[in-house]
Image (cartoon, rainbow, N blue to C red; front, top):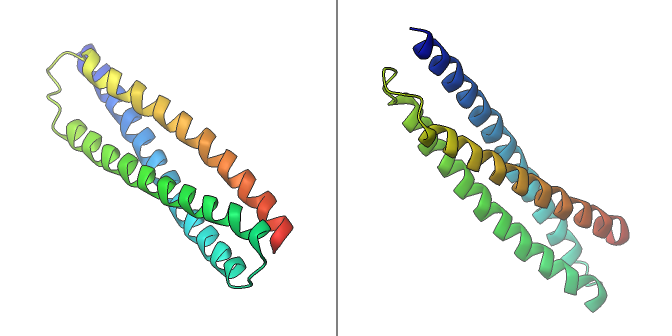
Length: 129
């Protein structure tokens, strides 16, 4: 019984993490869409090569980030399915724990890269908006 209780707590913690990450990823996707619109407004102003060269790089990075967000959201959906179909009498094996760890590490890396890109974008906007 104690093992089942431990597993329930663990799974609810995992579900909570997945929910938080999903909300964060969706927020970042909306943020990237706002940044895309800002870049488009700068592009329309024909500010020359000095403004346009980094702009295209940012557009490409935003496209890639949105692809990564899509993949991360897909992984979250898959993990939620696994949790919902987990047999509570089964041992709390390394499988779920490893999946949690790798997702956590991937989110940590993603967030670090997201904020680096955001910082670079904000510097660019300060200069060209």
